[in-house]
Every structure is written in structure tokens, then in C-alpha cells.
Length: 473
Picture 1: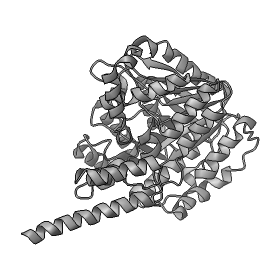
Picture 2 (picture 1 turned 30 degrees about the vertical axis):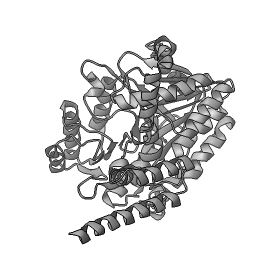
Picture 3 (picture 1 turned 30 degrees about the horizontal axis):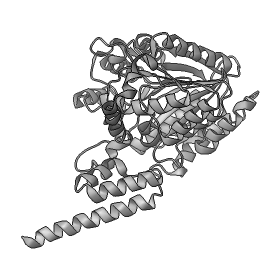
Picture 4 (picture 1 turned 180 degrees about the horizontal axis):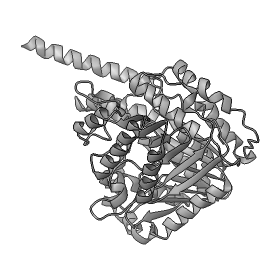
């Protein structure tokens, strides 16, 4: 028995040393490296478990080969690169080039956009478009619930299949954990092609639970698309326990739908190993020419750079007048926090809107210490009081806006697969600015509630302690 004991110790020591070497070789920020080395050294067993769940860095892994991405992109999209009359605003050319050079997020003109801030109206629009579909429907969602709304969407998709429409659905396995297997079996029996993203099954749990597909994309017939913050669940219509749920989503008709289509087909290849590059999925779209320019920017832990995070940093540092941000969770990475504070100190009007209460109490506590740091630099912070605001918006200088799935937190910028639309159009930026300003009227300022908390040592200590866990939330 004593030999088994020593073999166990030797095995554990070997695993720990290998994990520590992996952390060192990742060349992360020194503070992160030291933190993980301390956890692995002084928290036996639990440290290893935490590392395998949350510490592995997969940004350098090529889960999807570049060759496959090129096939999906170049065969079907490059003919749209040369667009007559494409006129990228001079003030945003570098931001556009940043996204193009990172992930082939091509800029597309000729787009018409409808903004939804009501789940009821949003899902009504989606159901209407599903009912009109004649060729294909592609849905990429973090959550699809087995509730009245989820079943209504599933029935509409089943009807589309009967009409001869190809229907593909990707759902995140962790996000949809509570959804019954019978729900997905029924979808499959009705001819809906559906795949879970990174299924988490024992014993192969490890780090998969930490890297989730948080995107919310819908593409119908390659000409109409949706992107934003809403999943497929009743809470987006009726709220939770009498608490209203506020969110923002946009409907796009126009060339930018090609970007949504490309994002979905890359994800479909990832979950199904089926390469789809047929040009029929990128049809000609009849729309009145306009200069509403959009890029569909995706980011993931497997891409070389944190694309959406870098875009936010660049926008914050280059803004001349203002940047307004709405996010349900505020646990910013160091680059984002640095950019917000630098911009505010420089005199840019930086406004941040977060919910007064979130659906995750630890995330709520952890965000408070970050909020104090932004306040000290002159950022104006507002707390939404009329329910839970789940919107993910950014508006800058009346000329640029972003709407999508990415929160301003570690998980979205470093761990999740996300997708945002970046829009370079004054009219649409002003409309989204109106959404922000309307939401401000339902907010309280930070000073109205939290000045007294700053003087309470124990509250600040607790929030600082919880903040240590923010990369895991």
C-alpha cells in the first residue's frame, strides 16, 4: 500500500510540474502567470482542478484549420470585396483595417437595419422571416430553452423543413444544459439539422466548460440576418420573477448578412466537420444602394488576437467626443479598463451603463471594485433600475456603433466565441444613441447609491476578494 501512496504523490507532482511549465510557456501577463503558479503550488488538488477547468490557454490552438476557413471565405465571399461606391469614413479606416487584417471581417455597404429593444417584437420579426424562408435558415444561439417560446421557434423551423427549407441550428451545450434531450430529439425527427457546441461529457470535461459559443446569429435565405444579445427563451419576453428583461438586437437586410453567414458556416464546420462553401448561401440581395457600412466581427479563444477587445480599446482611445457603453456584466480586462480610464482622463465623455442588479450575484459584487476605478478617472456610471438590462451596446462620436453578444468582461473577451456588428453610419449610430439615452432615463447615477459603500472597509474588502474570481465568472 505504501508504494501506491508514493506513486500517487509522484503522479500528482508530475501533473503539477507539467501544468506549471504550460503556464510559463504561455507567456501571459506576469501577474496572471504568478497567480496560477501560486494556485498550483499552494492549493493541492483544487489548484489542478481549477487549472484544467479555467486556466488552459487555447488561443494558440488551431481548432479550425486556416485552410478550411479560407475555403468557406474565399470561394463564396471574395467576389463581394470589390463593392462599387464603398466609402469607408476616413476617421474609421484604421478600425476597419484592424478587423479585416485579423479575421477577414470584410466591410459591407448597402444595409438596412431595424433595432429591437423588445423581446416580443424581436421574436415576432424572427417568426415572420422564418415563415417567409424558401431556401435555408441558420441559427447560432447560446441558449434555446424547452419552454413555450423555444417550442414555438422549433415548430416554425419544422414547418420550414416541410416546405423544403434547409434548417441548421447550433446551440451551446453548457448554455442549453437545462434543455431536455427530448426537445432536441424532436427537432432532429422533424428534419432540423442541429448540433451542440463543444458537448461537455464526463470524463472529457476539463477546459471545455470554459470555452463557450455565446453568439446569437440568425441568417434566413442569405439575405436577412439578426445579431444581438437575445437568446431563445421566454425570459426575454416576460422577464424573470416579475423582473423585466431589457435587451437589444438588430435585424439586417443587405450585404452584411454575408458576414453573418460566414460566421455561422465556420461554426457549422466546427461542430459537424461539414464544409459548406456553395455560393448559393451568398445570394444577390436586391436593396437600394446606401453607405451604411458594417463589419461582422467574431472573436474566440482560438484566434491569434482578441479581436472584439482590441476593437473596443481602439475606439475608446480614438474617440474625440464620447463613448457610451451598455453591458450586463462589467469585469473588464486590463486593456479595456486602461483604455476607459485613459479616455476619461483625456476629457472624452465616457458613460457606462450596467444593471443595478444582475442575474449573477457574484458578478455583481465583483464589478463594483472595477466601477470605483472608472469613477475615479471620471467615467460616468449609471445603474439601470427598471429590470435586468442585458444589452451589449457601444456608440461613439455619432458615427460608429456596435451591437452583438460580447459583454465587457473577461469571459467574453478571452474565453467565449462571440460576434458583434460594428456599424459605420451616422443615422444608425444616432438611433442607437437614442436607445442609450432613453435607457439613461431609467437609471440612477453611481453617486446616488454607492458613495457610502466607499467608506465601508468590509464592503470594499469583500468586493475586492470576489474580484479575484472575475476571470472565472
